[in-house]
Image 1 (cartoon, rainbow, N blue to C red):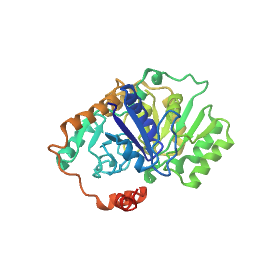
Image 2: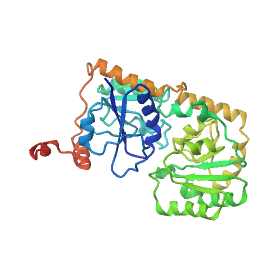
Image 3: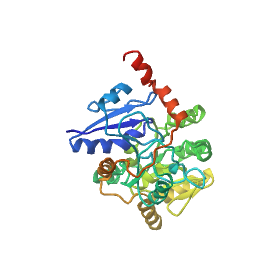
Image 4: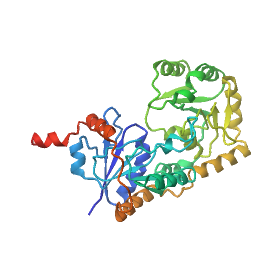
Length: 355
């Protein structure tokens, strides 16, 4: 009998995270469907299945629901699986990264490697209502595929700029003039793309203006960043988790006031330092590239393109073991009520109305 799995989308970045998982589900001969939260763009392909209501989800009756975000509808059937939207890089200057916040929604956390698993194992013992499996990140299956690892052949250097949305560390307000100047004076091609949560109209219009003024600048608004990562030679960023994903392709990154700088980065403090730093990055210094490889291995050692397979195996193991030995999840009554109101899910009233 075929197994049903549900992929829960709250932001556009979820598609690229869960598509490798969908591919593995299909490879096994099982069914995958998507539920896209209201307000999130529909970026599904023609052969992908979308469930448009809570009732359709109930009828689909998934054995597991996967989410790369911070929450998941508790009333959906199936095991609730956290996949994460990125890696634990502490982009906010805090004692503990928000990556490790336990909100009480999930049965399984699928961790990525040494940077995440040990602490999640501690949290597993502390809270007792979920299990932790080190599987690697499903999206890593894409990064380490041979076709993705091929180096670009650009006529001129391509610089990718994808700043984070986090206000205290976002570089976009500080670099608009310098990027405008570099676009006019350096023989580089620029691709600028924003996180879907970076929506400040003044900032957006400033960078769209750069693209309008210069033929060598593109402002990209699509949800699939992978082609951009593949094409670029160097990334300019701040403290976004996309830095690590770019480094998976064995490429250097220049950062502006990174919250946790290290030898794997070329970090600068002033806008006028950006140009010389990019020039250095384009030479791919041997010591820098060695640090990059060590840093990425600490976060994601699973490079066999089987992370998605391990995620599905984790679900099977969890179902086989059941909830024996686990505590009940927290009530989360206010959060649950808000989610039901958001999705218009009131089963008691539907029964009264005969639905």
